[in-house]
Length: 258
Image (cartoon, rainbow, N blue to C red; front, side):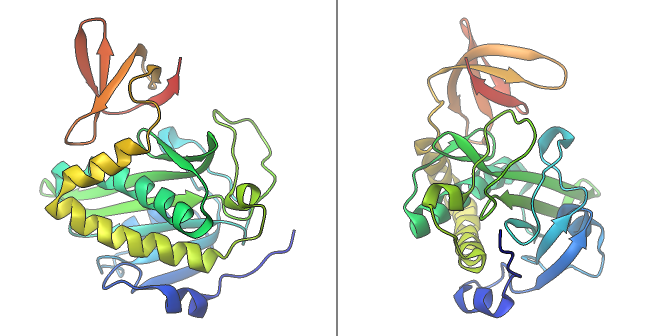
């Protein structure tokens, strides 16, 4: 499979943002772009994006490895310095929403979303998101949104909870990583404004793409497994699980249909 280095100029032409991605760091090898942005004190600007071709310790939720072939995909993180702590879950949902919207806009593929932050094409996983943060004196100092999108990779070794796919596999043609990244960042900036002004609109857009709402689900965390009906998500982005005649707010876990 042919590899192609990321063309920063091509990406820059299509980037139409005020802040997101205006400071852009391109790295060949790094342990994790999330760790890089969380720990690098020289990078302070809201909206800084770090894109890596290869992550030696790329990870998903629950510390799972995120495997990605170099120069085939998009593995990047966005540094946010202006986030309301009460809206951090909506930022998480919003990030998966914009990845889905970008894929739909550019490639007309049908996407769906899985709580809290997986993007699926034809029920196969094409992207995941991991939010991490650092606080100072009980205030959020840095929030990092890590995004991994399977773009041009076509083979996936190993075992997975959800079968993986890529945009290329579903679109049946090689796609431009530069175009896709700029589209994601353009939409993400718009969505951040919306989260400030009209968070309920972001939640509604997210819910429209989540096929699991109303269904019987299993929620697994590191400590326990719960079964119930996926009733809704609340105004802070938490999952509402109906167990018999009570509703429980779920903050964390892996969700699958029963």
